[in-house]
Image (cartoon, rainbow, N blue to C red; front, side, top):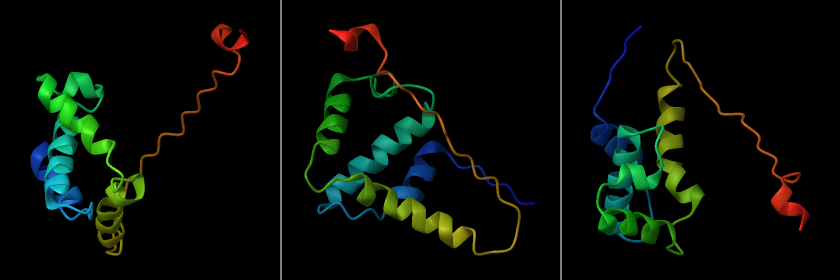
Length: 109
């Protein structure tokens, strides 16, 4: 089995560098955001970005009309599908967490 670990920035570039978000600056920003989040995978956006300007830029990116979940995830899915076409063993991790806040006291007002 071959294992290759890249830096968070390299991983982000290979996974999201070809995202079609309507402007290459958006794709560049997405790669930066993904790299920061990959470097701090258990953190939040505010924890991943040390500077307010970087955090604000990430929020602006996600608020753009042409930036959708489908467009962001498309190049990552394509790379994953392509990699899995080769014979081998693969570990697919899925988060099946389900949160239900319908019974939270704040919802009974």
